[in-house]
Length: 248
Image (cartoon, rainbow, N blue to C red; front, side):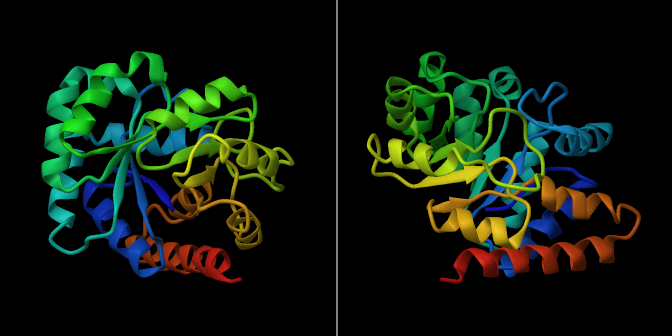
């Protein structure tokens, strides 16, 4: 489940990257909505957001990008957005527009379930899957509350901290997944820190999905002035991750 930031480095290239990731073996793509204060994201995704925002991309434009790419692919796409852009558009308008454009789900990392009533109601009305995050510090009652409102999958944050590629995986992943499965029958997916084929393969043995963001954006960032190199290197790297996940 790769993550890329919409509009990074350009809206047009974002669309090409979506299709490239599908061809590389992705099963679902997280399309990030850039935000000026991405509190859950580390430096890599922050820089991607800054590049996208410098191009003046908006939430409505991102929804339209999905609408356009839907002419070429049916791969599930989840928008990952901080709540402020959604709130400004309006929960109902966002869910309606996103669903009509072909968005399958929404991940909101900074919205507590207790404050999500309006969004949840609109998402249910328009059949938009919702995804909330749990962390290694989430107590059992919190796991239960978050799992109850996550209609798509539950997003397990593998570490306490922000996004970013890491050299090793946390020992907290396995017990967190085991505990979470006591509260939900829905898929459990792990992100934050997965950056190599070996790590992806290890996580795939425990979880239903493996989310990789910063490591893919690092590849994009190394080739910002060369579109062909971005696409070819992302295709190769994402394909390597996909093979690691699907090998048993």
